[in-house]
Image 1 (tube, rainbow, N blue to C red):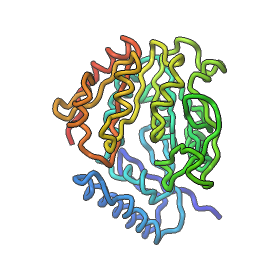
Image 2: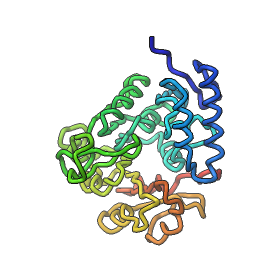
Image 3: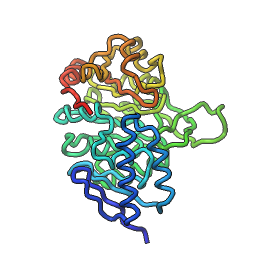
Image 4: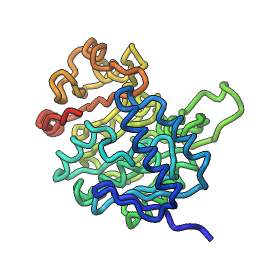
Length: 318
């Protein structure tokens, strides 16, 4: 018989449904997150694998807020950081989404993975917005659908990859959070996936023309193609949240937004502790200090979103 999932409340720290061994493992994961924080949490995923190797498979369901539940395999090397109540995932994104909770927009979660942001943005504290969660991996989509079901099936799940134009491609990678679309000449392995351009959401009537949007692009290297394929969708009332990876010293995503689109980019600047206009690429030489992580660029396609980005409160230092 399948065991009920472990339950963890991030607000109170309460852990229910765990064995003695799993309680010890949870304490170890929490300690590992704190100990590795000064080093960009390098080595944390390895520690998770070691911890998970001595445990039976078991799901854990986190209560993120009073209206948001998020499930993943206990000991997962990526999401187990959430067991550390002092850890905030993508703090700049959370601060922005809280700041625009009262706005009228649809959230498009591209590369949704297990659906963390889809769960939160559709929850009451974040405004209860309509969410379309798009994810190519069949295994990830199963987890994504599970999290949709845990939250009353309140967001839509679409199994597709995002590109400049529709087609088929191979999805490859060893970690669920780092799967990439690659050229098929790279080898015969990988999962075949269907690719859509974001403009197709307009063509199919999924999104109405002029609907204000927040579009998160976490598509592991396909951000430029995704932007190319969504120019009509973004129109003049959207904000894009795209990753510019720390290891890319050419700042390709930001360079493309600055030089090839009319969108106004912003980025969190640790010097001012605020999201600032990204007017020059050399700002990123200083800001992108850690080559192991991604940095979010907020690109406004109209004055409404530019004003909302500019009015974001400063981020608490940690």
